[in-house]
Length: 197
Image (tube, rainbow, N blue to C red; front, side, top):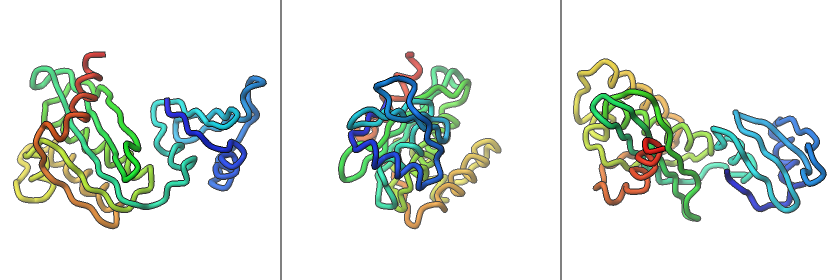
């Protein structure tokens, strides 16, 4: 549950300017509430708390982020192949971690989970409004397929690769790189934590 330290009156104006409907708070401590993109923002004195399953769009509006460069890390995990699967992702900019998360995705193969993780991190980065993205993952197969160096014979993976390429067109500049697992350890941990939970 992200907590954004800010002037709640300024935050209210930012959301109103973006066309978000603002309502009065439910208690004496709540200054106001707003719902947007599946998340809810609740303002208190000096801060706004964002709750919900997909908080990225609302956070981006509140933080006033527009453009910039981000490093995106992704990892998929599954127990069995196929088996219960999950994704983990981390977005990092010059100020530190912007967003991170992990969630289960049902039953999938390891490669399907890796693609699902890549799709998730690209969607979150796009929601934040970044215009340059440097993607890092420890799946050489996925990275080389997305770059067009290796073919994709599996029809499901082909569809996922097409989706990834569509998402990448939302950025002015992008690259994708294979990195060792130890560099991708936070995304890996988030994916495994999601399965453990």
